[in-house]
Length: 512
Image (cartoon, rainbow, N blue to C red):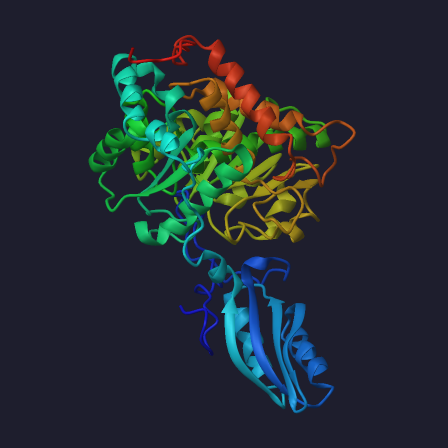
């Protein structure tokens, strides 16, 4: 929608109902309408240009109207002042897109005030995209051109043809990641297609640069055919040092990742799976420190058997978890349930040898830990009362958690979620920049479970004993120690695993 003309706010569709998390997890039943969240985030921030009459009280009425509508005024800037009135830009935050429309309607109702234009600040930030290409070398003289391009570049090409192992060192390959999607599971919004997925992939590439100084590029594929996706990534792989799969729905993502790992000599990482699993495990380790429980002893329930849920369960088991149950729309996944897909059946066999059946509240009875990667509002908060004492609750569905994290605090000792406006945000940006930084630094050719566990251990260790409490079990995404610590752990583990890294050369490649 336009961000320049009134009356449109240029906002995305309302998220009044809770979609799935975008990890391929299916929502059981029809989710209830999500309650309106707190007005704290800039993601639903708008700027409204108004003209007001000469009444000195007009500005006060404008601020009152926004507040009465439940919004928060963050700035009022005078654009033009005349004897007969003012033109002002009012910037205010809403809880969601529908709420921003309500605030605009409230402003239109203010006597003596006319709404001229409404701009959605998030849409304005995305105008023209969020990425650009910049040269690392000066191109100011003939000498510059002769070395960066012809004829000098020919010498480098010939050297690489003779010594292909030097491609990572003498080209962008050594510091470049492809962010690949088919647009089938975009955030919590579902199958939107490759074009609509592009802003997310751009954002992911921007995060790579900001947090790990890695040059990443969005690759949005107009196909959901597994063979075509695998072959396309194979064809472009020579130009990249790593492949980050993103927002590809389960179970297709599992096959794509497995086949690419077999065929490529660069690491393949599915962030919806492995990034989520790393951060969830790191946060859980520290949450269990808070409640004085041990991972092998606790009973864990994971809601959601899609990409994220499957990866979390795998990493939990590899880390030593002893009791895990998985719930999805079929109920508790049981090996004797003939309705299960092959992927869910495999998960059930790893987690539920006793063939326990039941709904989500039944699974939670007596459980120590709840980890949700399914859909919003699938769990009544009262069901948490049936969990064990000093319970740990991680409702991570996005944008609306499985259960209200704020209300969950009356039943759980530690609560974490994916929300940035609450303590203990479980955010994949804590993992993937450092993971790829380490993989690229080590010239890794693959990524292993050992590397994922090393990343989780390094991330959890950043929270010192004197910092640890129920509201701080995971570092901030802006903690400058996060990426270096994760990168070092992953690189060390990669170098320690036989055959996991490419050979290193110190010669100065030359064509002679």
